[in-house]
Length: 199
Image (cartoon, rainbow, N blue to C red; front, side):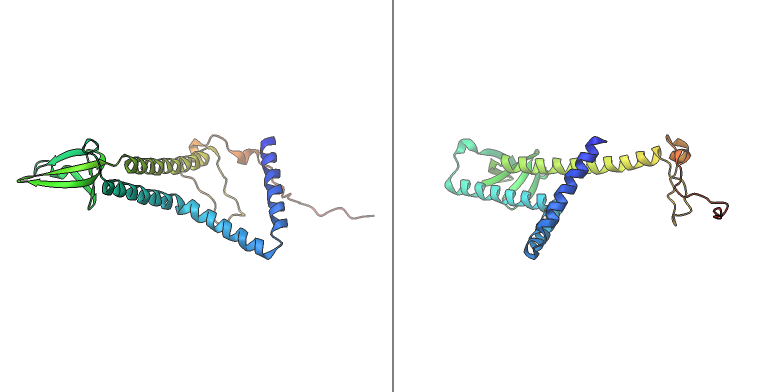
């Protein structure tokens, strides 16, 4: 309980200080813009940062290929009609092969098969893997929050109230662990008789 009070007073102090600062109209506009940017970044900023980082990594790889790559850094991948479907093309000069991302340096066509001399793109592959891992974790967190709502609905049974237009109805009230309606004392007092008259 003390921890909750401490957080409350910290938030109260923060917002009163912020309110004092916002008396100036310029600061109000700056604060509104900062909050808007913070909310926007929270919604889609991570995706934007990943795209910017990915574009930067692609530029670095292209510059490295233009500068010249030694043969020892290249991987030779031979594709025939049998394993042609093992390639998953990302774009014109990039593909996945056996779960790894490669950038094409040069291509040789020898009859019925094609030989790609490629550069493993480990940094971009790691970036994409981290991004997908974060996406998967956020999906898990959303499902955990849905589970916590279901658990709280199961633990606390909310009785139908005459003051609520649309009372909350939960599917299985038999599994309720704590029925707080039995422990609740209303602040509304039913007065059955008028108050006494003064003499």
